[in-house]
Length: 173
Image (cartoon, rainbow, N blue to C red):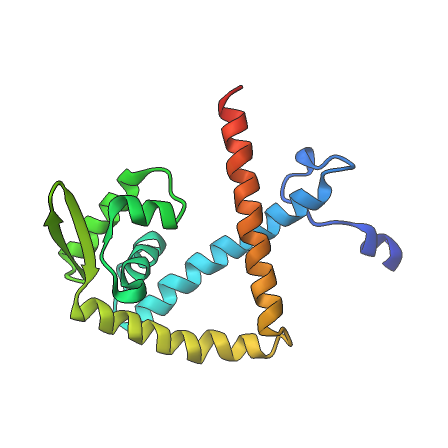
């Protein structure tokens, strides 16, 4: 294979889904798959280093979401903000975080509102310190500006909306 042929060859996750017009999306999806799995692995390793080795990636995301802005959140807030359709998996994560005493719940009327405990806050702060040491240092070597990272994040949020719309369309078939 010549170097020109190698440049033209695209990396796709599902060749059978990549038509002549759709290979870019398949290439993006493959990148998303490996980024998701790398991110999941990173969150668990970082949380392990922070002192809590038994949390899953979802539980870590839920903990950080509850800790965000030190504002109480209910189940529907968490599922909405994390774009998770199945509230049962988030509810299970909440129970595990409650048992680990990283969050606490307060019943207000019929709703349960969650907030981080002092232990949960300290764990999130330790996670942040390790994140800065291990991840942000590495990111600085990528020669990407803060604006470029923000643009990538905005594109991912936009694509998330497109996938949400497509899933609604597929549900109506």
